[in-house]
Image 1: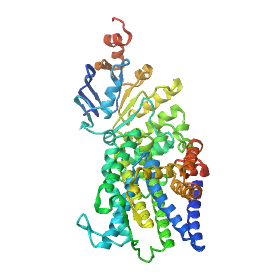
Image 2 (image 1 turned 30 degrees about the vertical axis):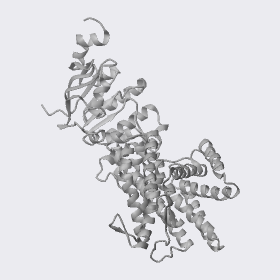
Image 3 (image 1 turned 180 degrees about the horizontal axis):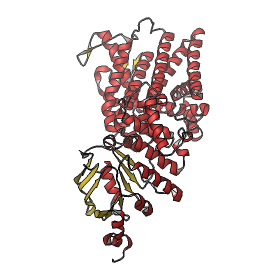
Image 4 (image 1 turned 135 degrees about the vertical axis):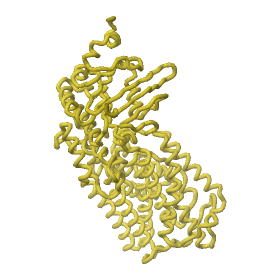
Length: 250
Length: 322
């Protein structure tokens, strides 16, 4: 089997006596959407933070395309191929959708800090940014608008476009459906479905219908441990998962 | 492009004022125009950090004063044949003085920025103030260059083709530098570096997530900002023929900040508008009463409460982002 794009092994992180990440192993391969689910407080955010680089693990390692990410900053991980979106969109609100995406193209351009050519007329930056915006279904009429004047759903798309514009090896999506409503959720699910072949996705999501529709495999995190990993049907039938989610004795 | 028109009009007004004063033989007002240009240049420096980088530095007098001392020390050693730190001789070449002033300010700004940028918000304000105070007290207590009394600059340094000792020529040189710095800032801010700096100010998380670490971008802008303030300080010292620790004091930092806020934070020509208003108030109201700063305070209050974009905001409307 091919080398996993993302490999998490033996990851541990404790806050005092609380083991928020308690020996987590995950592997994600090309062409795959792996959903990470778990009840509130299971340690999903802590795990994401360690993959994204905002939190250093106590033990264990994270590799992206075979490269150990230990000690790498958020920016260095992004350049290594980690694209991510946030639970609450994190964009520069006064700037246009195009400018928010353009910076991701700039980050992997050969001259990242040019001081002469204006970015507004720099086709090498604008063309890929606009292609990414079009890819997530945002039309040209919206490109020049400040992100602050876009709808919540459009902002989620801009964030996804920014992640895609960096040509990532892996997408780490933190609740991309949150707050989208039924139509928005369906549209976002269609989009992610189409992206599956392009880039593998680690999907953290509370919307179970979306998770079961999209995921090739599901990993269930409870109290810092992965209690089950497998195909959606197997997870649905798993006694330990039902116990954790529904509190019923199987 | 309305802001561009307003900026050009402000610069045109300053140039016309200086030339008009010269035509009428009013040397005092020619020097006043040169003073506006110097102060505006210092403001342009701070604006790069404060307005475009979101770094509220309360210590830019340190860089302004270091530039002034570079000019003063260069003139002193050109006069007495000595050497700074035993190695650097004095000079009467104005471009060399400018270079020395910018290097002195930039070299100081590098460690100050590196340490200060580990903090944010009010702590950043306080730590930049603390560094500036350290330099201020050093200048007061170090006897070699005048200590508390400061250093006189008997002769202005020289520039080819120009008579720098002539008030009009000196004003035109200061004005040209101001315009060059503003145009340079405009170019850099519209380019990739500026795009990264805007993101570092508006949302550093977004910038890092895109793959660019915010700290080096902010540090570069901080150092460039200090270098511009240092250049302004060298001009200011040569204009007055004098440099003293007062140029390094925290009042001066506050003054530069007031100029930026009056004119419009993060507006290219904001410091020009701010400096014109500041020097005008200082001269006009200062002629009526020694308590002119009370009136300045009221005006600043009005600007902060009612015109948050400063003078440029009132004249050209809100900032438009690309």
